[in-house]
Image 1 (cartoon, one colour):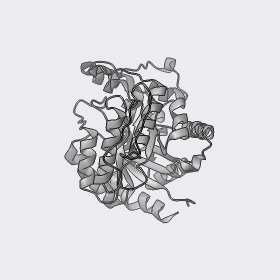
Image 2 (image 1 turned 90 degrees about the horizontal axis):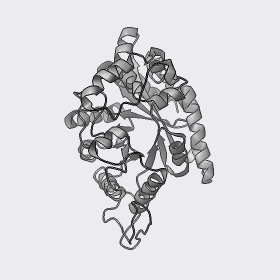
Image 3 (image 1 turned 120 degrees about the vertical axis):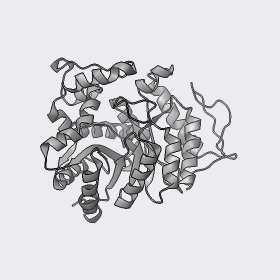
Image 4 (image 1 turned 60 degrees about the horizontal axis):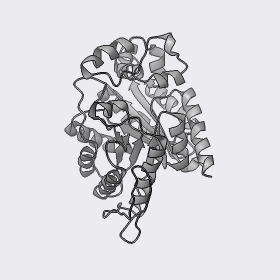
Length: 349
């Protein structure tokens, strides 16, 4: 039994706008508290994946749902000026009647370098972007913002669209490094991690707490999320097939694998996200074969519904308050989440 409310969100995989809207409607009806959408121009998953523009798609979702919260997981500050992101977020918050979240990270190479966008950014630029967005969300003609910085605002500025509620939409900091996790603890309303085992998640939460201490905050003020790919089935072959996309993902995330205790010398693995599209699929396929199945299973919730519940509870014991689930063979797993997992956490608080 959980001693406090736990929210269960859903991660929307790349798909057409129509499919994303329909999946969000299903999530709301099932009882999920939030939906999160990746922000990519291109993806390493498969050549057939579709990556619609984030804010347009979230607007379509907002207009077709009533209570579920929604936001990017995550967008960056490199392809859009932070002021434009603040304006888009405030507008989405108005259209959704106060349901908008913002997941913000430092960006990834494959969304930047092919389009001549400078990458990687500096930590100082990321901190500045967070401050610009947060300040502008509380601005008005009578409360203008003046900031200095590389991409900051050098004169008095304000937005002429305000968030739906007086309290601005929450900013969730996403990041894969110790530094960005500490920034989440110091400045974020929430933290959006990526793939993690129970062991790595425990260490990541310590980074959050260190960041919070630096600004005299309690980590209880921060909405700590956990991201869990999920497959509910008793059939091992079905599970292995369903979570295969996570093997592909791990093949492109050597830093995640290193945190899990694997060394690059254990199997050939390189960061291939800047490779030309024509070579991606074959190269990822080759690398993914070298990712141990146990590594994939360690970052997922798999097995029966009770197994899934137990895995979620382990993350909750480590501090997670907001579990974001992702499914792959959606029909069976989604139904079991709706019928068993969501009611359990709704009724055992």
